[in-house]
Amino acid sequence: MSELITLGISHKTAPVQLRERLALTQTAIRGFLQETVEHPEVHEAVVISTCNRTELSLVVGDPVLAESAALGMLAQRAHVRPTELAERIYSPRNCDAARQLFRVCGGLESMIVGEAEIQGQVKRAYEEALAAGTTGPLTNRLFTAALKTGKRVRSETAIGLGRASISSTAVELAMDVLGNKPDPHVVIIGAGETSELTARALAGRGVRTIFVANRHADRARALAERFNGGVVALEELPAQLARADVVVASTASPHPILGEEELAVVMRARHGRPLLLVDIAVPRDIDAACGELDGVTLCDMDDLQSRVAHTISIREAETARAESIVEEEITRFAEWLGSLAVQPTIRALRDYGDAIVEQVLGENEGRWEQVSERDMARVEAVARSVMTRLLHEPTLHLRTLGEGRSHGRLQIMRELFGLEGAPDGATSEQAPVAEHGNVRPLPRRASGS
Image 1 (spheres, rainbow, N blue to C red):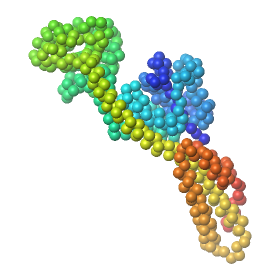
Image 2: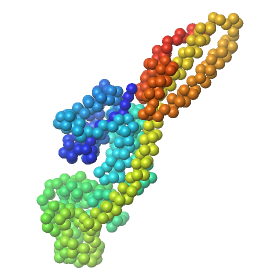
Image 3: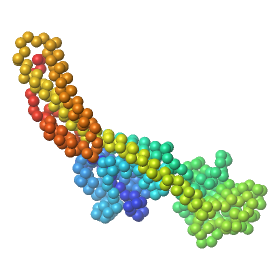
Image 4: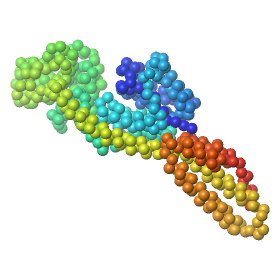
Protein backbone atom coordinates (compact mmCIF):
# COMPACT_ATOMS: atom_id res chain seq x y z
CA MET A 1 0.00 0.00 0.00
CA SER A 2 1.53 3.30 -1.13
CA GLU A 3 0.75 6.89 -0.22
CA LEU A 4 1.67 10.24 -1.66
CA ILE A 5 3.04 12.76 0.85
CA THR A 6 4.57 16.24 0.61
CA LEU A 7 7.00 17.75 3.09
CA GLY A 8 7.72 21.41 2.59
CA ILE A 9 8.47 24.86 3.88
CA SER A 10 7.76 28.14 2.12
CA HIS A 11 7.65 31.89 2.64
CA LYS A 12 4.31 31.27 4.36
CA THR A 13 5.76 29.04 7.08
CA ALA A 14 9.46 29.86 7.51
CA PRO A 15 11.73 32.94 7.55
CA VAL A 16 14.25 33.43 4.79
CA GLN A 17 17.13 32.42 7.10
CA LEU A 18 15.70 28.90 7.44
CA ARG A 19 14.65 28.67 3.78
CA GLU A 20 18.21 29.49 2.75
CA ARG A 21 19.60 26.69 4.89
CA LEU A 22 17.25 24.15 3.32
CA ALA A 23 17.69 25.31 -0.26
CA LEU A 24 19.32 22.74 -2.55
CA THR A 25 21.65 23.70 -5.37
CA GLN A 26 21.30 22.06 -8.76
CA THR A 27 24.31 19.86 -8.07
CA ALA A 28 23.06 18.84 -4.62
CA ILE A 29 19.53 17.85 -5.68
CA ARG A 30 20.40 14.57 -7.38
CA GLY A 31 22.42 13.29 -4.43
CA PHE A 32 19.66 14.26 -2.02
CA LEU A 33 17.05 12.48 -4.16
CA GLN A 34 19.08 9.28 -4.29
CA GLU A 35 19.73 9.41 -0.57
CA THR A 36 16.00 9.79 0.02
CA VAL A 37 14.92 6.77 -2.05
CA GLU A 38 17.54 4.62 -0.35
CA HIS A 39 15.20 4.54 2.64
CA PRO A 40 13.14 1.33 2.38
CA GLU A 41 9.84 3.18 2.91
CA VAL A 42 10.44 5.79 0.17
CA HIS A 43 9.71 4.51 -3.35
CA GLU A 44 9.66 7.72 -5.44
CA ALA A 45 10.91 11.27 -4.83
CA VAL A 46 10.95 14.71 -6.47
CA VAL A 47 12.41 17.85 -4.85
CA ILE A 48 11.43 21.44 -5.68
CA SER A 49 13.89 23.99 -4.30
CA THR A 50 13.54 27.72 -4.95
CA CYS A 51 14.26 30.88 -2.98
CA ASN A 52 10.75 30.77 -1.52
CA ARG A 53 10.17 27.04 -0.97
CA THR A 54 11.65 23.58 -0.59
CA GLU A 55 9.15 20.77 -1.14
CA LEU A 56 9.60 17.00 -1.26
CA SER A 57 6.97 14.98 -3.13
CA LEU A 58 7.32 11.37 -1.98
CA VAL A 59 5.59 8.07 -2.70
CA VAL A 60 5.98 6.01 0.44
CA GLY A 61 5.08 2.74 2.08
CA ASP A 62 4.73 3.54 5.76
CA PRO A 63 4.01 7.30 5.82
CA VAL A 64 5.04 7.73 9.45
CA LEU A 65 8.45 6.11 9.03
CA ALA A 66 9.06 7.81 5.68
CA GLU A 67 8.05 11.26 6.92
CA SER A 68 10.23 10.90 10.00
CA ALA A 69 13.23 9.86 7.88
CA ALA A 70 12.76 12.70 5.36
CA LEU A 71 12.31 15.22 8.15
CA GLY A 72 15.57 14.01 9.69
CA MET A 73 17.41 14.44 6.38
CA LEU A 74 16.11 17.99 6.00
CA ALA A 75 16.92 18.87 9.61
CA GLN A 76 20.45 17.54 9.22
CA ARG A 77 20.88 19.67 6.11
CA ALA A 78 19.64 22.81 7.89
CA HIS A 79 21.60 21.99 11.06
CA VAL A 80 18.51 22.26 13.25
CA ARG A 81 16.72 19.81 15.53
CA PRO A 82 13.95 17.84 13.76
CA THR A 83 11.44 19.03 16.37
CA GLU A 84 12.33 22.64 15.57
CA LEU A 85 11.97 22.06 11.83
CA ALA A 86 8.69 20.18 12.31
CA GLU A 87 7.08 23.39 13.55
CA ARG A 88 7.67 24.97 10.13
CA ILE A 89 6.89 21.97 7.91
CA TYR A 90 3.58 21.29 6.17
CA SER A 91 2.91 17.67 5.25
CA PRO A 92 -0.30 17.02 3.28
CA ARG A 93 -1.04 13.52 2.00
CA ASN A 94 -2.55 11.97 -1.12
CA CYS A 95 -5.01 14.37 -2.82
CA ASP A 96 -4.13 17.18 -0.42
CA ALA A 97 -0.49 16.73 -1.39
CA ALA A 98 -1.46 16.82 -5.07
CA ARG A 99 -3.55 19.94 -4.46
CA GLN A 100 -0.53 21.67 -2.91
CA LEU A 101 1.60 20.93 -5.98
CA PHE A 102 -1.18 21.94 -8.40
CA ARG A 103 -1.57 25.27 -6.55
CA VAL A 104 2.19 25.83 -6.64
CA CYS A 105 2.24 25.18 -10.40
CA GLY A 106 -0.67 27.55 -10.92
CA GLY A 107 1.09 30.37 -9.06
CA LEU A 108 -1.49 30.37 -6.25
CA GLU A 109 1.10 29.67 -3.54
CA SER A 110 3.67 32.21 -4.80
CA MET A 111 4.69 35.29 -2.84
CA ILE A 112 3.34 37.29 -5.79
CA VAL A 113 0.20 35.44 -6.88
CA GLY A 114 0.32 34.38 -10.52
CA GLU A 115 4.08 34.67 -11.07
CA ALA A 116 5.04 32.50 -14.02
CA GLU A 117 8.60 31.49 -13.10
CA ILE A 118 7.49 28.77 -10.68
CA GLN A 119 6.04 26.56 -13.40
CA GLY A 120 9.42 26.36 -15.11
CA GLN A 121 11.05 25.62 -11.76
CA VAL A 122 8.62 22.73 -11.13
CA LYS A 123 9.30 21.35 -14.60
CA ARG A 124 13.06 21.47 -14.05
CA ALA A 125 12.67 19.77 -10.65
CA TYR A 126 10.69 16.95 -12.25
CA GLU A 127 13.23 16.58 -15.08
CA GLU A 128 16.03 16.39 -12.51
CA ALA A 129 14.23 13.59 -10.67
CA LEU A 130 13.67 11.76 -13.97
CA ALA A 131 17.38 12.02 -14.69
CA ALA A 132 18.19 10.75 -11.18
CA GLY A 133 15.86 7.79 -11.66
CA THR A 134 13.80 8.59 -8.55
CA THR A 135 10.38 9.02 -10.17
CA GLY A 136 7.81 6.31 -10.74
CA PRO A 137 4.24 5.79 -11.96
CA LEU A 138 2.64 7.94 -9.28
CA THR A 139 5.02 10.91 -9.39
CA ASN A 140 5.06 10.78 -13.19
CA ARG A 141 1.29 11.09 -13.28
CA LEU A 142 1.31 13.69 -10.48
CA PHE A 143 3.79 16.08 -12.10
CA THR A 144 2.33 15.68 -15.57
CA ALA A 145 -1.07 16.63 -14.15
CA ALA A 146 0.39 19.52 -12.11
CA LEU A 147 2.15 21.03 -15.12
CA LYS A 148 -1.03 20.67 -17.15
CA THR A 149 -2.91 22.47 -14.37
CA GLY A 150 -0.42 25.33 -14.36
CA LYS A 151 -0.73 25.66 -18.13
CA ARG A 152 -4.52 25.75 -17.91
CA VAL A 153 -4.44 28.41 -15.17
CA ARG A 154 -2.27 30.67 -17.30
CA SER A 155 -4.15 30.12 -20.56
CA GLU A 156 -7.70 30.26 -19.16
CA THR A 157 -7.35 33.06 -16.59
CA ALA A 158 -5.67 36.46 -16.34
CA ILE A 159 -3.88 35.56 -13.10
CA GLY A 160 -0.50 36.09 -14.78
CA LEU A 161 -1.50 39.35 -16.48
CA GLY A 162 1.03 42.18 -16.29
CA ARG A 163 3.89 42.55 -13.85
CA ALA A 164 3.34 42.33 -10.13
CA SER A 165 6.70 43.33 -8.66
CA ILE A 166 8.47 46.68 -8.65
CA SER A 167 11.47 45.42 -10.65
CA SER A 168 9.37 43.56 -13.23
CA THR A 169 7.07 46.59 -13.61
CA ALA A 170 10.11 48.80 -14.15
CA VAL A 171 11.30 46.43 -16.87
CA GLU A 172 7.85 46.41 -18.45
CA LEU A 173 7.99 50.20 -18.64
CA ALA A 174 11.46 50.05 -20.15
CA MET A 175 10.41 47.52 -22.79
CA ASP A 176 7.41 49.68 -23.73
CA VAL A 177 9.80 52.53 -24.41
CA LEU A 178 12.45 50.43 -26.16
CA GLY A 179 10.07 48.48 -28.35
CA ASN A 180 12.14 46.71 -30.99
CA LYS A 181 15.04 49.17 -30.80
CA PRO A 182 18.26 47.37 -31.75
CA ASP A 183 21.06 47.35 -29.19
CA PRO A 184 19.27 49.52 -26.58
CA HIS A 185 21.34 51.28 -23.92
CA VAL A 186 19.99 50.64 -20.42
CA VAL A 187 21.77 52.02 -17.37
CA ILE A 188 21.19 50.68 -13.85
CA ILE A 189 22.38 52.90 -11.01
CA GLY A 190 23.11 50.71 -7.99
CA ALA A 191 24.05 47.06 -7.40
CA GLY A 192 21.61 45.91 -4.73
CA GLU A 193 18.96 43.19 -4.81
CA THR A 194 16.41 45.27 -6.74
CA SER A 195 19.05 46.16 -9.33
CA GLU A 196 19.88 42.47 -9.69
CA LEU A 197 16.22 41.52 -10.20
CA THR A 198 15.87 44.29 -12.78
CA ALA A 199 19.01 43.17 -14.62
CA ARG A 200 17.84 39.56 -14.61
CA ALA A 201 14.48 40.53 -16.10
CA LEU A 202 16.18 42.67 -18.75
CA ALA A 203 18.64 39.89 -19.59
CA GLY A 204 15.66 37.60 -20.07
CA ARG A 205 14.51 40.01 -22.78
CA GLY A 206 17.95 40.02 -24.39
CA VAL A 207 18.87 43.51 -23.14
CA ARG A 208 22.45 44.24 -22.07
CA THR A 209 22.82 46.61 -19.11
CA ILE A 210 25.47 48.97 -17.76
CA PHE A 211 25.85 49.15 -13.99
CA VAL A 212 26.86 52.40 -12.33
CA ALA A 213 28.16 51.95 -8.79
CA ASN A 214 30.80 53.26 -6.40
CA ARG A 215 30.18 51.74 -2.96
CA HIS A 216 29.53 48.21 -4.26
CA ALA A 217 31.80 48.15 -7.31
CA ASP A 218 32.80 44.51 -6.72
CA ARG A 219 29.18 43.39 -6.58
CA ALA A 220 28.41 45.47 -9.68
CA ARG A 221 31.23 43.71 -11.55
CA ALA A 222 29.90 40.31 -10.45
CA LEU A 223 26.41 41.23 -11.67
CA ALA A 224 27.81 42.57 -14.94
CA GLU A 225 29.56 39.25 -15.56
CA ARG A 226 26.39 37.27 -14.84
CA PHE A 227 24.16 39.34 -17.09
CA ASN A 228 26.61 40.08 -19.90
CA GLY A 229 26.76 43.75 -18.97
CA GLY A 230 29.35 46.35 -18.11
CA VAL A 231 30.22 48.46 -15.08
CA VAL A 232 31.41 52.06 -14.67
CA ALA A 233 32.12 54.38 -11.74
CA LEU A 234 29.67 57.03 -10.61
CA GLU A 235 31.91 59.74 -12.07
CA GLU A 236 31.10 58.38 -15.53
CA LEU A 237 27.33 58.69 -15.06
CA PRO A 238 26.94 61.85 -17.23
CA ALA A 239 28.51 60.11 -20.22
CA GLN A 240 26.21 57.12 -19.72
CA LEU A 241 23.16 59.40 -19.44
CA ALA A 242 24.06 60.99 -22.77
CA ARG A 243 23.84 57.57 -24.47
CA ALA A 244 21.07 55.94 -22.43
CA ASP A 245 17.58 55.07 -23.60
CA VAL A 246 16.43 54.02 -20.13
CA VAL A 247 17.89 54.65 -16.67
CA VAL A 248 16.81 52.61 -13.64
CA ALA A 249 17.98 53.98 -10.29
CA SER A 250 18.01 51.83 -7.14
CA THR A 251 20.61 52.75 -4.53
CA ALA A 252 20.60 53.16 -0.76
CA SER A 253 21.82 56.75 -0.96
CA PRO A 254 20.10 59.10 1.53
CA HIS A 255 20.27 61.95 -1.01
CA PRO A 256 19.40 62.29 -4.71
CA ILE A 257 22.16 61.20 -7.06
CA LEU A 258 20.79 62.94 -10.13
CA GLY A 259 19.63 66.55 -10.01
CA GLU A 260 17.78 68.80 -12.43
CA GLU A 261 20.78 70.98 -13.36
CA GLU A 262 23.06 68.07 -14.27
CA LEU A 263 20.33 66.37 -16.28
CA ALA A 264 19.48 69.59 -18.12
CA VAL A 265 23.05 69.71 -19.43
CA VAL A 266 22.80 66.08 -20.52
CA MET A 267 19.46 66.62 -22.30
CA ARG A 268 20.86 69.51 -24.34
CA ALA A 269 23.64 67.21 -25.51
CA ARG A 270 21.07 64.58 -26.51
CA HIS A 271 19.46 66.93 -29.06
CA GLY A 272 15.89 66.05 -28.23
CA ARG A 273 16.28 62.26 -27.84
CA PRO A 274 13.75 61.15 -25.17
CA LEU A 275 14.92 59.57 -21.92
CA LEU A 276 12.98 57.37 -19.50
CA LEU A 277 14.05 57.58 -15.86
CA VAL A 278 12.70 54.92 -13.48
CA ASP A 279 13.42 55.68 -9.83
CA ILE A 280 12.77 52.66 -7.60
CA ALA A 281 14.81 53.87 -4.64
CA VAL A 282 13.49 54.99 -1.25
CA PRO A 283 14.60 57.71 -0.54
CA ARG A 284 14.52 58.78 -4.20
CA ASP A 285 17.71 58.78 -6.27
CA ILE A 286 16.41 61.25 -8.85
CA ASP A 287 15.22 64.78 -8.09
CA ALA A 288 11.50 65.06 -8.88
CA ALA A 289 12.21 68.27 -10.85
CA CYS A 290 13.98 66.17 -13.48
CA GLY A 291 10.59 65.03 -14.69
CA GLU A 292 9.78 68.63 -15.77
CA LEU A 293 12.57 68.71 -18.35
CA ASP A 294 11.65 68.41 -22.02
CA GLY A 295 12.11 64.89 -23.33
CA VAL A 296 12.30 63.33 -19.86
CA THR A 297 9.75 60.86 -18.51
CA LEU A 298 10.22 60.17 -14.80
CA CYS A 299 8.45 57.35 -12.97
CA ASP A 300 8.96 56.92 -9.24
CA MET A 301 7.81 54.34 -6.68
CA ASP A 302 4.33 55.83 -6.42
CA ASP A 303 3.81 55.44 -10.17
CA LEU A 304 5.11 51.89 -10.13
CA GLN A 305 3.13 50.93 -7.02
CA SER A 306 -0.11 52.08 -8.63
CA ARG A 307 0.62 49.89 -11.65
CA VAL A 308 1.50 46.95 -9.40
CA ALA A 309 -1.66 47.46 -7.30
CA HIS A 310 -3.78 47.45 -10.46
CA THR A 311 -2.12 44.25 -11.67
CA ILE A 312 -2.55 42.54 -8.30
CA SER A 313 -6.23 43.51 -8.14
CA ILE A 314 -6.76 41.86 -11.55
CA ARG A 315 -4.88 38.76 -10.42
CA GLU A 316 -6.84 38.50 -7.18
CA ALA A 317 -10.07 38.73 -9.13
CA GLU A 318 -8.86 35.76 -11.23
CA THR A 319 -7.86 33.67 -8.22
CA ALA A 320 -11.30 32.08 -7.81
CA ARG A 321 -11.28 30.88 -11.42
CA ALA A 322 -7.74 29.57 -11.03
CA GLU A 323 -8.72 27.66 -7.89
CA SER A 324 -11.70 26.21 -9.73
CA ILE A 325 -9.35 24.85 -12.42
CA VAL A 326 -7.13 23.34 -9.72
CA GLU A 327 -10.14 21.57 -8.20
CA GLU A 328 -11.24 20.25 -11.62
CA GLU A 329 -7.80 18.74 -12.15
CA ILE A 330 -7.69 17.41 -8.59
CA THR A 331 -10.98 15.60 -9.23
CA ARG A 332 -9.44 13.90 -12.27
CA PHE A 333 -6.32 13.00 -10.31
CA ALA A 334 -8.42 11.68 -7.41
CA GLU A 335 -10.38 9.44 -9.78
CA TRP A 336 -7.14 8.05 -11.15
CA LEU A 337 -5.70 7.62 -7.66
CA GLY A 338 -8.88 5.89 -6.54
CA SER A 339 -8.73 3.53 -9.51
CA LEU A 340 -5.29 2.39 -8.34
CA ALA A 341 -6.74 1.34 -5.02
CA VAL A 342 -9.40 -0.91 -6.59
CA GLN A 343 -7.30 -2.56 -9.33
CA PRO A 344 -5.79 -5.27 -7.09
CA THR A 345 -9.26 -6.17 -5.79
CA ILE A 346 -10.69 -6.29 -9.33
CA ARG A 347 -7.88 -8.59 -10.43
CA ALA A 348 -8.37 -10.79 -7.37
CA LEU A 349 -12.12 -10.92 -8.04
CA ARG A 350 -11.56 -12.03 -11.63
CA ASP A 351 -8.97 -14.60 -10.57
CA TYR A 352 -11.45 -15.90 -8.00
CA GLY A 353 -14.09 -16.30 -10.73
CA ASP A 354 -11.60 -18.12 -12.96
CA ALA A 355 -10.68 -20.39 -10.07
CA ILE A 356 -14.33 -21.32 -9.51
CA VAL A 357 -14.76 -22.20 -13.20
CA GLU A 358 -11.62 -24.33 -13.05
CA GLN A 359 -12.86 -26.05 -9.91
CA VAL A 360 -16.33 -26.84 -11.25
CA LEU A 361 -14.96 -28.14 -14.54
CA GLY A 362 -12.42 -30.23 -12.68
CA GLU A 363 -15.03 -31.70 -10.32
CA ASN A 364 -17.24 -32.76 -13.25
CA GLU A 365 -14.47 -33.92 -15.52
CA GLY A 366 -15.08 -37.64 -14.96
CA ARG A 367 -18.85 -37.42 -15.20
CA TRP A 368 -19.05 -36.84 -18.93
CA GLU A 369 -19.90 -40.02 -20.89
CA GLN A 370 -19.21 -39.08 -24.50
CA VAL A 371 -18.09 -35.47 -24.96
CA SER A 372 -16.00 -34.21 -27.82
CA GLU A 373 -13.26 -31.65 -27.31
CA ARG A 374 -15.45 -29.16 -29.19
CA ASP A 375 -18.39 -29.76 -26.86
CA MET A 376 -16.12 -29.48 -23.85
CA ALA A 377 -14.83 -26.15 -25.12
CA ARG A 378 -18.46 -24.98 -25.44
CA VAL A 379 -19.22 -26.01 -21.86
CA GLU A 380 -16.16 -24.15 -20.60
CA ALA A 381 -17.13 -21.07 -22.64
CA VAL A 382 -20.63 -21.10 -21.11
CA ALA A 383 -19.21 -21.46 -17.61
CA ARG A 384 -16.85 -18.53 -18.13
CA SER A 385 -19.64 -16.44 -19.63
CA VAL A 386 -21.79 -17.03 -16.55
CA MET A 387 -18.88 -16.10 -14.32
CA THR A 388 -18.16 -12.91 -16.32
CA ARG A 389 -21.78 -11.78 -16.21
CA LEU A 390 -22.05 -12.55 -12.52
CA LEU A 391 -19.00 -10.41 -11.72
CA HIS A 392 -19.87 -7.62 -14.17
CA GLU A 393 -21.91 -5.48 -11.77
CA PRO A 394 -19.52 -5.84 -8.80
CA THR A 395 -16.64 -4.88 -11.11
CA LEU A 396 -18.49 -1.81 -12.41
CA HIS A 397 -19.26 -0.80 -8.83
CA LEU A 398 -15.61 -1.15 -7.84
CA ARG A 399 -14.52 1.09 -10.72
CA THR A 400 -16.83 3.89 -9.56
CA LEU A 401 -15.41 4.04 -6.04
CA GLY A 402 -13.80 7.43 -5.43
CA GLU A 403 -10.53 8.01 -3.59
CA GLY A 404 -11.19 8.78 0.05
CA ARG A 405 -14.30 6.54 0.39
CA SER A 406 -13.08 3.39 -1.28
CA HIS A 407 -11.27 1.64 1.56
CA GLY A 408 -14.33 0.63 3.59
CA ARG A 409 -16.27 -0.58 0.56
CA LEU A 410 -13.28 -2.48 -0.76
CA GLN A 411 -13.02 -4.23 2.59
CA ILE A 412 -16.69 -5.28 2.38
CA MET A 413 -16.18 -6.55 -1.17
CA ARG A 414 -13.14 -8.60 -0.14
CA GLU A 415 -15.03 -10.10 2.78
CA LEU A 416 -18.08 -10.96 0.62
CA PHE A 417 -15.97 -12.82 -1.94
CA GLY A 418 -13.33 -14.12 0.43
CA LEU A 419 -10.53 -12.02 -1.04
CA GLU A 420 -8.84 -11.42 2.29
CA GLY A 421 -5.36 -11.38 0.79
CA ALA A 422 -6.06 -8.87 -1.99
CA PRO A 423 -4.04 -5.69 -1.39
CA ASP A 424 -5.49 -2.22 -1.76
CA GLY A 425 -4.02 1.24 -2.19
CA ALA A 426 -0.97 0.24 -4.24
CA THR A 427 -0.26 1.60 -7.67
CA SER A 428 -1.01 -0.71 -10.55
CA GLU A 429 2.70 -1.15 -11.23
CA GLN A 430 3.49 -1.79 -7.58
CA ALA A 431 0.49 -3.96 -6.70
CA PRO A 432 1.27 -7.66 -6.91
CA VAL A 433 -0.81 -9.55 -9.43
CA ALA A 434 -3.43 -11.53 -7.55
CA GLU A 435 -2.53 -15.18 -7.63
CA HIS A 436 -4.88 -17.93 -6.60
CA GLY A 437 -3.28 -17.86 -3.18
CA ASN A 438 -5.10 -14.52 -2.67
CA VAL A 439 -8.48 -16.30 -2.70
CA ARG A 440 -9.95 -19.39 -1.18
CA PRO A 441 -7.85 -22.34 -2.43
CA LEU A 442 -9.58 -24.14 -5.28
CA PRO A 443 -8.12 -27.13 -7.14
CA ARG A 444 -7.26 -26.43 -10.80
CA ARG A 445 -8.64 -28.67 -13.52
CA ALA A 446 -6.07 -31.15 -14.69
CA SER A 447 -4.33 -30.25 -17.92
CA GLY A 448 -5.39 -32.09 -21.06
CA SER A 449 -9.04 -32.51 -20.00
